[in-house]
Length: 117
Image (tube, rainbow, N blue to C red; front, side, top):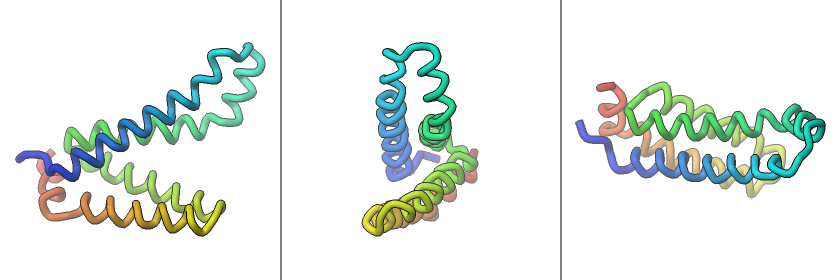
């Protein structure tokens, strides 16, 4: 079965934006000294892990792995919780994005695609 176009688009968006966020988050480490680097990594490791999981989810959704689809849903739910701590506009934005992604990732054609793998 051919991969639904919506799954392809969503996967690539997660890969691209996750990669950009990861690289921009790691770029400052190039100029840090050893002690600075260790302190910063100890305090920001969760952010980098989140971005890595975003990329992994996008890549493996391209291969039709259902666990990757679940990973992306959990990743977005986590961001909904975080955005609720910031502002109402961030929360609403993440809820809208979540709703759109849920709609496309759980349509019958997407379900069939993820079931075949």
